[in-house]
Image 1 (tube, rainbow, N blue to C red):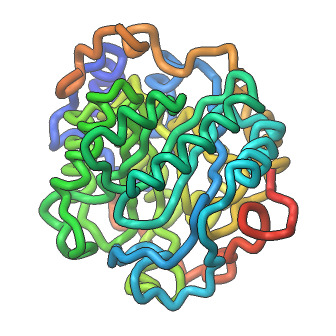
Image 2 (tube, rainbow, N blue to C red):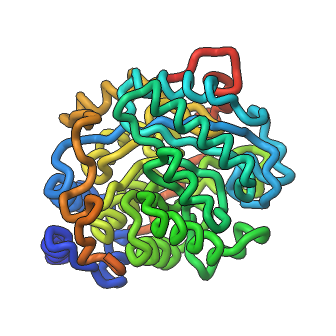
Length: 375
């Protein structure tokens, strides 16, 4: 296909595709799907070889969030039967993180529900970061605490945080349809604060919330302009008890097209397959490794993932290798001090699956419980 040859050529040069080209990837047929994966895979291998970065989530504080994000099981008014607990102590969080590191994770992602941290919360998380760093040599720590106030990103950086995550989630045009308690601009501002503090910015999206192809392209182009080092691609987990519980819009093929489009638009960034891969990609998860160079190991914030051992076996069986702590994730030009030139500042409609509620399992192990974590 001329389209795919053009996109590969642009990806190898870090040249931005046109919006029409990005939309065309999403509109490709199932007959062309393997060609799309192979083309995007060439771009992925050019910049990241066959390495897969493993990340591990530690939910520091679960549930009871005052925000009304429609997709979230921790939202205000959620009736999802998830774990609810207050802040883990630094030792508890470090113990949970150690399980992920022992399982092969290179980065630990510390997440807390809420609109944003108080200064006391930042102190608490700073202590947790220091404890994790002291007990796990070489591990990267990413914080995800919501909207940041002035000076908080700098304090997290001083405590040893390497990165900060705050996702855009969807297009600016439709953001008000999924959340009313904060704005799209609030999210962009927090990513800018992380950048300015010297933290590696991590920002991505959620697919499957009823958005159009145009919405997906809008948010991915916005991410390209925002220039994060890491772009997590979440696939909506439609929790019962949330407003989007009936939004079962994704097929495995659709998920692969979305990941391919993200890779073509953001060729040299860490593209991470995040929440929902087991639910929506299912048996096609290994194919997604040809598009993304990063995954979460084990469980998510409020839902269970596949067994950590199965993740490792999947990576090996697909012909990839786990990225070591002594290896640099990003290409040289994106490393600290490098030039991000080439960035913005740097499908045919498939048959919709029947809802697979049997694949949505509330997390009952790991952080906040007495049961061993999944790693």
